[in-house]
Length: 95
Image 1 (cartoon, helix red, strand yellow):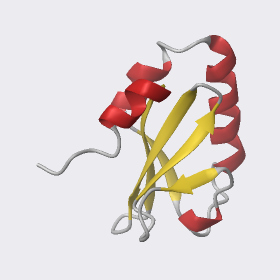
Image 2 (tube, rainbow, N blue to C red):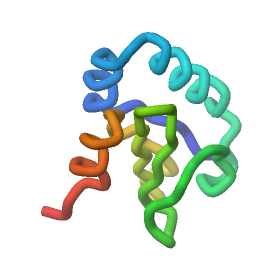
Image 3 (cartoon, rainbow, N blue to C red):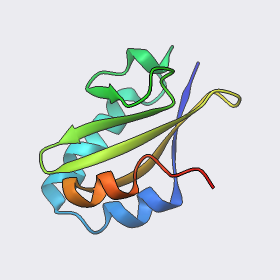
């Protein structure tokens, strides 16, 4: 079983978006908590790489970035932001 994990960056950025979008994102999170057999099974996710390491979910003007950690079987809610800002920051650039 895969687990959803909330990153610190996500916690900070969700506070800065309108309440309507916060509710929709939290509802999506609650819908998927504890029932993930494979990351590819998540609904509404558009995978940005062929190996399903980075994905995004659209919520109106906002995007939620997902990072898959295959070693620990975690799907990390990495970043949320407006469309223009999101694509500048996600997926993370290699160091």
